[in-house]
Image 1 (tube, rainbow over the protein chains, first blue to last red):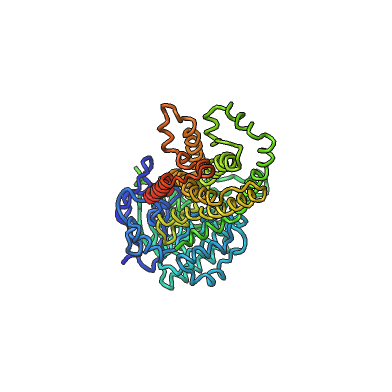
Image 2: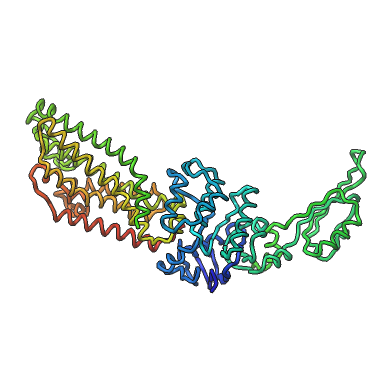
Length: 307
Length: 264
């Protein structure tokens, strides 16, 4: 049985078709990244899976339970943890009271263990919490009843780099224990380390679901290189180089330079060794290689499918 | 069960204490003032009142101000208890669901394995904290006060008046609760329910003996008369039953609407 099964799921708000005939499955024990730019409809799917709203078409099951049936949904929620994109708690109460409430309804056997990893100031009122602390409290409540499935909407967005690493390690460990994780993000690099598989959503439609390695191979790198001399785009004619843009500064006016410098940017999806060999033929002033942003990937691979 | 009600109820304790002190103090002030008021003006006050438009007298439930019972029935119970406290309950109820939806806290609550009906009912149940507290504090203060100033009121009538006001206040709260599930913003739900209830409160009295008298039938204030209870000892059980049914129907309506609602 799949942990999540979505079949033809559609949510039409009248003015916006937020989810258009989505079909995918998340296997048990899998960490599934639900990717897409802001406004693609990721949150709409999550809200439907959690039963906060009803689909206008299609169906979905969570841990085998139909989300359109309230009693089934409640049965599923005993085993589901949830972290919304902006976790929001009653401002007047302390973190401890929030956890007590959640614990009294869904259980809290892992509370102490989680609080040693994520440590929000429990005796302070939520009003005085920083965004990071609210996120930590959200994470603790999402995992504290030892759920089989955790659904998280943009879990890494409020975290500083240190916490993000902690989060990645934590999710990795949970995955090893067999937990299924469904998380959304609009930043591929933030979730690539933890995901087994990703679904890419664009304007309400699922454009692909694939293994993370396959996607990363296709997404390629964003390269910015500055080389000495006046060279044209042809200098980087290697398989896998796309969209080369070059500009040359003559650099001679200050009098102390070594002549013109050319700056080129391109996306690279080929073998990195070929690129290094070719770059080696030039005298480099500077080289920047980074993961292509998800938006670039969308434009490259999925842009043309957009009518 | 009742975890949500307990959680919400606990956070009403402080507000309830404040309102109890305020309303208890107010009640005591009225009670203590009455002897001076009655002895200085005597029966003249009712003659003075006769000069007022009847609708106004009716709106504020003024029947007689020469007795402690009549004075309390109009000044304390009709105005403060039925109008102000009624609106307080509607206002509180109007925030129960809408405020959580507005502040995106509802997602967190609904991620728990609880039914939507349970969320609405338990939140509504938390209003019993102020409801019970005020119905203990105020009659106790009023009775003790009237005994102390030597104008004792009938404790049974006083008890009955408070008992009959429970379904009345719950009806006001019910209107607020329905508004709370209809609107996604607490302020909107509060304005809508307060506007409607204030309108109905005055419509009931001002429209009496006019062609629009029928409007008063749906006003909760038609079904509770502190004068009849305190002065005449008439206990309108049927009216209380009407209010009870109204409150139940309103809460049920709120549950039905909330179960079908898309939380956005």
